[in-house]
Image (tube, rainbow, N blue to C red; front, side, top):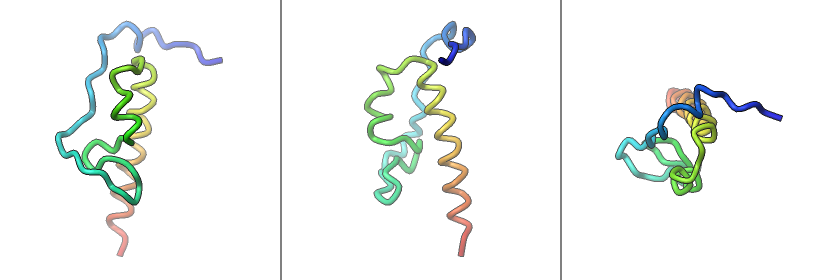
Length: 73
């Protein structure tokens, strides 16, 4: 069972990572701007800060993976 991180629960709601570049990558099924899936975008307002932090960690991985695949010939 995961313990809640008090630092995450004591801060105000985390803002959306939306960048204003709203275009779905149909191959990877996430937004080309913020790297969230449709479910993550639609559910953001209902997520707890802990859930949002989990999504943000995943977004970093997706962004990094996207950069790595863009540099391939």
